[in-house]
Amino acid sequence: MKFWKERSGNGFPLTVAAVLAVLMISCVIYEYLRLSIIASHVRDAVQSAVISVATENYSNVYSGLRQSYSGGFVRSGNQWKESWTTGDVYRRISQDLGLTQERNRYVRKSNQIIEYSISDLQVNVINTPFAPLFPDFQSFTAEAQIHLTVPLSFGWGHLPPMQANLEMKAAYRPKF
Image (cartoon, rainbow, N blue to C red; front, side):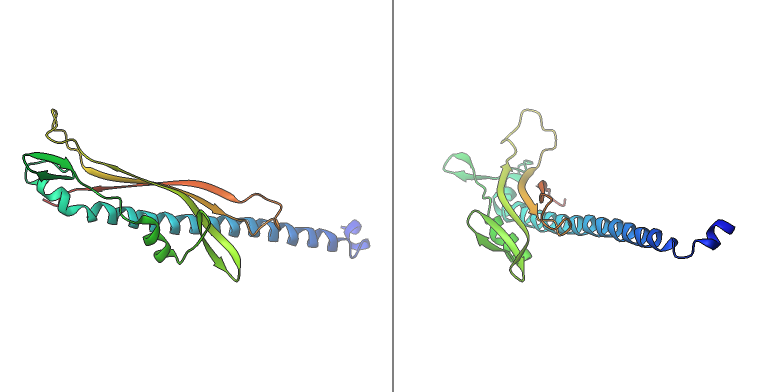
């Protein structure tokens, strides 16, 4: 006890170090939360766009549903041909998220600073086979993959941006 009483003011550097450590840890936690929220928001917007692709193909899928298939086919003469569309997913995503196109990517800016960007969209529509040999339940499915890049606001530009490939899947299933 006597040791601490004789050294007044020595606790100041330790207090400053503790406060800085708490601030640094809280900055890292807030940055992680920011990245999680952005990734979740982009994933939800892309999921919504992919769901709309699956539902836009309703008119093509319906005629097959009457025959107990859920594929996108249309009758042409005396044959059935595949008929589906991938839609304009980029346009839907950019409208939902407020993105602008720059070269081969779509970016969201705030005060001329890039918040995040998306690129490399791939939409894959999986049509169920017509009159399958094994009638296991299969559904008309739309899958999408997109590359998300988010620059970090923590690290003052010395850390590389977060990059993630987000994958979404939507299936058209009849209600009844």
